[in-house]
Image (cartoon, rainbow, N blue to C red):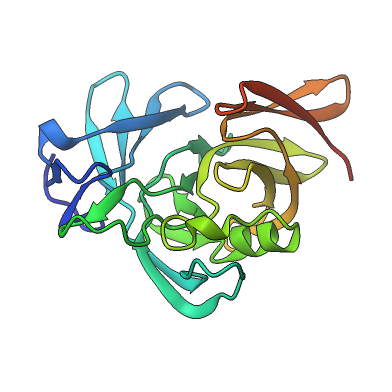
Length: 247
């Protein structure tokens, strides 16, 4: 993989064994989303902090480094939720990805999965949902501290993970419903799903959060008639939660 701005540097894997230097042996594809016409596949490289766009017809690759985010965060395990302005600066390290059906932008769930070069289990991952231009990979906006804020307001913020990845957004899905563009993102450590309005890609807004089973790993919107539902596959509890999206 050619050197590209915005990819991770000076990191090792989550077990503190393998240097993440963006060479072929350390590229770790995580999730994939296809353009509406199936021409392009967008694949997250979580540990590398990037996305690769694959032209399915020609095999041409475009590497998009996702850079870092800076926002308020609670980094202390002290039984409280007390975010400090601009306390977190971290590589996004995306896990889940979804592409808007218009092809204008893609969204990522920025969980994080590496340590610094010293092997420290320090804070990592963006703790955000981020929105990027699908043609250029340029950042449009991210949710900042909203996911952890919403988890705290709902009483499900995992303070024991404050010094790691907070609520840890893991996977997501995107749909269009009643004139809105909505993203549902699983918060692995908060055991919850957050609903994010990305109708204005420049201003993604968390509008709801609901508890599900333990360790949500898979998220999918589905419809029954005119009603919109959401399924969450919960890895740790071995359950599937079904939620209805109601306005």
